[in-house]
Length: 211
Length: 306
Image (tube, rainbow over all chains, first blue to last red; front, side, top):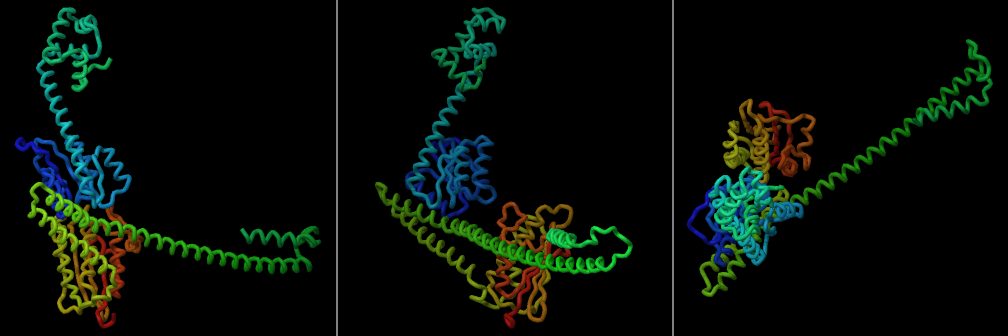
């Protein structure tokens, strides 16, 4: 699936093999000014282009070809983190538990209350918005990290693991002064205000050395 | 066990007062010896008869228990079948209900907007009407399914039903690259029954055949459907596939509810098919076919006898 640039309005994707349920949902969501795209099958949805905007997926559990729960797993495996709201004709408890454990936002049984659906969609879109912001921040941090020299990258690992300048100097086989210079460059280039700030960045990037 | 115990008791009784037992054995048994022998034989015979009677009673009791158990299993099966059926009915009904509820909410929301959107509201309301009829149709279909085959009987051209079913199954047959052969001679007598139900039976049988050939790679995938006059007053439809066939020992089982070889199957298809065929006064049987796989035979009587 590719990401398309143009629209920034949040979009709700509906995958249900029943055309009349799709149409009804589409009308309901449009009546509260949500962008909606509907699909008859999981495969159709996979072929679609996801917009570069917060989005969520309303997914029928019972789908032709692949069950909604399996599809949830497939999406997660291929790194598509779209929040999912499940709908089903008859949901049993094990099914619900499985879906929720795998990160579903909500599990609604048909016929569902419109407010329940709209609330779930709000939660899902908020969740996606937050995830996208975090993703954006991490991408930015990564860019900053890659702008560092390899020595500076090494220093950031040592510093954020709590080593003293002297220890770092010994580890790297350079002078304390050199370490201090690298350290200053790292703080400046990463835009870190304090050591705590830098540690937080290292955590987000997953580059903090475990001591 | 009983016999051995009885024999022991008899021997004990006889051994007590008999002086012969204490006397040393000689070659001739003597007078008391032969009386003893006759008595022993008589007692043994009686014991044997008693033992046989007891065993007979036990067997009959076991049979009764087994029968009761079978009835119980059948009852449980029916209950489970009803459960499965109601689950699938509730799914069929809940789809239109979900659509109705969502459309009604949508209509209200379109009307409640700062500038009410009459067009959208109207469209949603119209969809509600359609969905209400759809739900009603679902119920109608279910009722029709449960109605006896006798109701709404009509003369049915078996060959026409076969052709319709093959058209319905065409997509599946083509996807699975199955060669279809038909031999449907003209001039067969019409059977009396419900065309829709017979179509359902045949479609189920054909679908099973298609699925049975799913794994077949080393030989041609073939489906052969033939119709023939059967006995003096009936028609026989035979559906043969070149699938894996079935162990003759399981040939009876495949008609039992919940017997299935498919991962996704409920095992109700053939049991329902058989009920429908029998409601038509016919028979549905399975046997190894000429194409390596299974041959399912549906015999249906014509109106004269039914």
